[in-house]
Length: 342
Image (cartoon, rainbow, N blue to C red; front, side, top):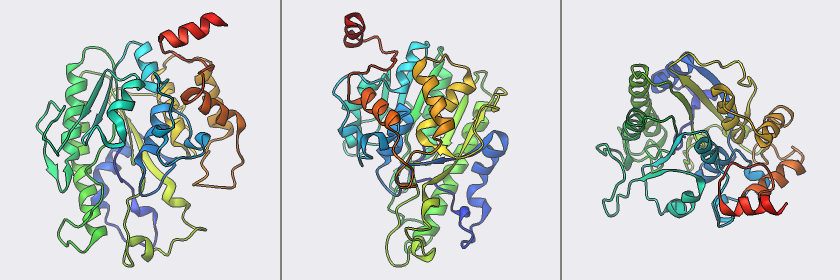
């Protein structure tokens, strides 16, 4: 999940050179290209992250800005738990402070074998590759290098979730410090260059690998001269800001026939990937596959006219706040005791 990554070519009013998105376009042409509906715009990355990590809608929790603050203090049935039950190693990679959004404390309960952070304040890093910066934050290329090393050095199959930082605001660095949008596009191009190199490395790797790439939200740009003001966006025409272009790419000839052609909410994408790799289904996964067909988009931010879905809301509450009565692969004493009491 790429921080603040968005394709501004969706706006016909703008003239954006394709050179900035060359690496992105190349990956989309080699794999599957689609659109996912993000639950947030310009900030609150953890909303998008929650949906990808849990496969559940933030709307089911009344759409909080920081859903990690409402989670029960216990082991959580995040998607990493499923991969662990299938024999995968699991890792979460984020080139920023582990204390931010309390990720270190909270994400330990999600089923990750490794949490890899980088702290610029005190110089401590969990990265095992050289750390470089591009602008204010860690270069996306550093993250790609870390991902490649994890895949290459791990004998078991591996599930990795990463959230990058390079393209986060401020956008006052570049050829013209006053040109926020121009500097942003320069950052995106640099990220795409690193992405191309990363995928080229994976092509040479004798390890079947599936890559899902998506931006968490459109970037935050403020002020009277911001690109959003130029586009004259308002409440009636801003839904495009929640439509994120993504790609799924592989190095082994994956079958994409099960991937929906129409846009779906972020929280469905984990099940799309599960179907591509042919992973086992339990009743919960089957249920979510059914919702993906009947309720493909469930986001009050994107369309507040979509009616509430009580089943989706109750299922979301049950898994992250309630007693987890829905099927769950976590081998925890609490869940075993609950099962034995039934």
